[in-house]
Image 1 (cartoon, rainbow, N blue to C red):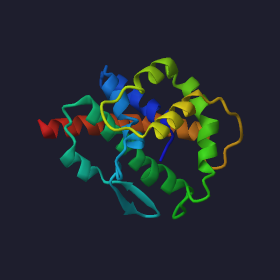
Image 2: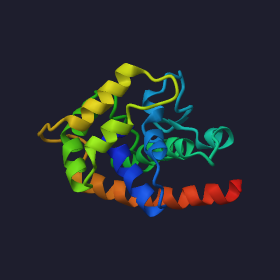
Image 3: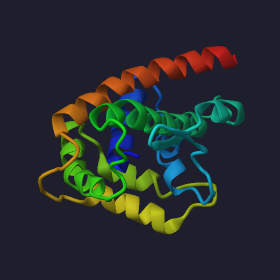
Image 4: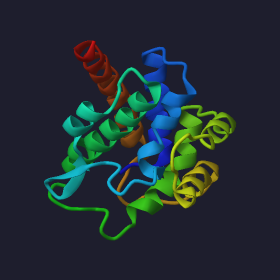
Length: 185
């Protein structure tokens, strides 16, 4: 799954494209990674990865609520990241097994923040406020990732390619959310 910074980039881009001015939408984009639920992603096997089962969530989430739309946005990014981006770069190879991709995230986070002009103070302020059972350790870890300014060479992810993917997938996810909203109304 991509880093919190990648999720916040997509959350910010989707919110701009769909004119969603909601703290709950942004919060929902982190929620699957911090909520204290055993299977918050309801994963199913697809190739070498376990990906979120979007159909399951379309039947359970209330898409009239911004928090739920944010949650779905998070899951869609995870799904596309695993099925489209990583699967094409590393066909039939699970690059999470050696955990080195997490170092890539650490090296890319600050660059993503700068490139997409993420407002970290705003994110830290709103991401502390949830009305559900949160795993505090996971929340703290994710917020710390927003503050990191680590520099290094990535092994799996190219900054420019990954940035382009995040921008492009924001368009795809925006269109998909509009389609889901039209179908549910």
